[in-house]
Image 1 (cartoon, protein in one colour):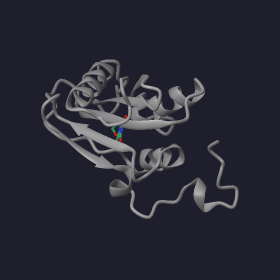
Image 2 (cartoon, protein in one colour):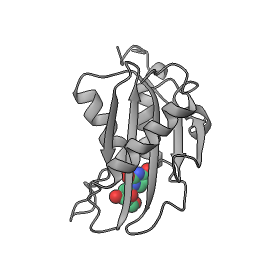
Image 3 (cartoon, protein in one colour):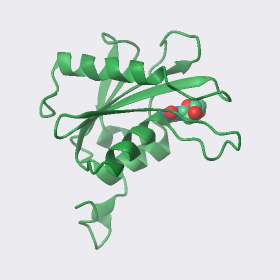
Image 4 (tube, helix red, strand yellow):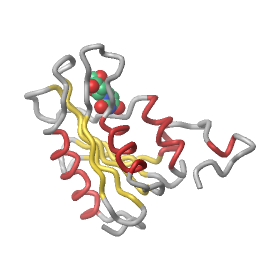
Length: 151
Ligand code: THU
């Protein structure tokens, strides 16, 4: 997919992949299922789901699963992420906004003014925001004297 300007078709494709990823959610404790699809700058789409744990603490959000899969495969530049979430067995009746920890992980690898976060109830019903809108005045690699940590 072209990662530059996200077309309506591009957004729909990304949401479709997030919906597919949500089916793989491992969430036997919260029964809240989340799927994410991360669009990389090179056009690849990497998906993730939430993965819970009996000890609760080690649980991982869908967004971070997608980011960590991508980074561990050598991908470091990202354009957008689509997120869908709702309780198991229920239709997507709410927009699932990323938690604070996931916003901070996005801050590590994304340009806040450009990275687009899409929260969706369906391929037709979605909201698009930038990371800067979701995490204003965020703290990131540029704040450290070693500001090129990402490269
Ligand atoms: N969850 C996500 O996957 N992403 C978020 O941004 C918020 C929460 C997951 C974590 C946990 O498995 C379940 O949703 C309920 O909190």
